[in-house]
Amino acid sequence: MLAVTGPLPAGADWAYEFKWDGVRALADISAGRQELYARSGVRITAAYPELLTLAEQVDDALLDGEVVLLNQAGQPSFTALAERMHVRDATKAARLAASVPVTYMIFDLLRLRGADLIGRPWRERRELLDALGLGGARWAVPPAFPGGPATYDAAGELGLEGVMAKRVGAAYRPGVRSPDWVKVKLEVTGDFVVGGWRPGARRIGGLLVGVPRPDGTLAYRGRVGGGIGAAIERELLRELEPLGTANSPFGRGEVPREDARGAMWVTPRVVVEVKYGQRTPDGRLRFPRVLRLRPDKPPEEVDDAG
DNA sequence: TTCCGACAGTGGGGTCGCAAT
DNA sequence: ATTGCGACCCCACTATCGGAA
Image (tube, rainbow, N blue to C red):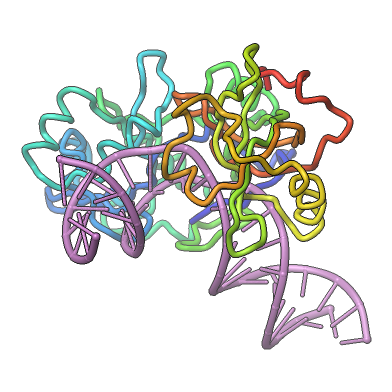
């Protein structure tokens, strides 16, 4: 079951959980055996051996949750998790499980001791899950809260990805992106200077953006290809085409070769407003998309705050 | 006839593995 | 040994098309 994106729902028929930035995983435990499955249905048991002792706490259950890798501050790091999720080799998995262990955040219960719970309301499934008393060094059942705004604020303070709102009376619908689950992500908008663009299936595939440095070069912040519809593309072409230049306005060697392939460089004069999730460890924008052009904003006034 | 929802396609940050260079 | 590319993970958004209203 998947969530739709939307504004924070309000009302007594909603409950709120933190949204964990990791990999979705179903844990199927029966007869002392345990398997983990990714959203695609692929078996990912071997990648996370530290979760296998979960079977000692429950003998027959189908659990839904998110595998996360917490940093020292207790915040999930998707970038760090990415280095673990492709691992198939048992020896390598065991070494990583010891040095950078994951945590399984369990939030739903779909089967218990032979009883299929999918048709039961979320509230009931959640009560049964809580009653199992699951908890250990490498897994947890994070709490659900009754207040939406408070949960959202807390997610912001804790540096989490956002909030999941769940309709308490709703059944579990496998594989369905249902409005009974609403994800509300903490996102920000910021202004960035266009230093180049790449042709794609559209005339403008994506923009290469950055923020100005005192020496006049741009500090690279990544590519932005989302949000460029026909109208914005037309505006961008009108502004960018006269600004073409032979040299990259970014710092030397700063744009990865992959990103620079086919790029058309421009004099850094066009400012765009971009919406995005968090930053990656090296400052690049995650899930970026163009909101609009900022013809009113001079490039010199762009900073890296937003 | 118009509107809406599902879906394919395009774009992003990443990692890994394999084949071509 | 390096590079390109697709397959997976996470995703947002746009354009299109067919069916419902």
